[in-house]
Image 1: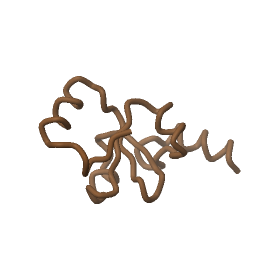
Image 2: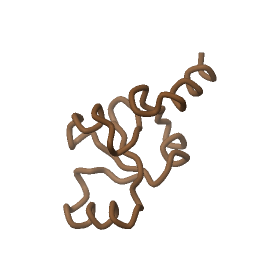
Image 3: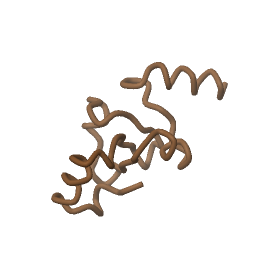
Image 4: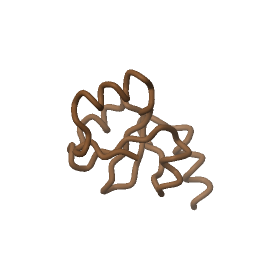
Length: 81
């Protein structure tokens, strides 16, 4: 997991280009989603974290975004409740 606020702009672009970063999350809300999610794009840089894959995000205790990852969210919700 990488915190957005701790990455230099060039380092972030390199990780995105090399596809080391595939998902973004909100550290305060513990939600992760796709990089293209409109909800995720609105979050504060200080709250944004990045993940290499879904397994890493779930391992850190994050849940899928209900907006951009509807299937994964439904599966998570059904298993949780």
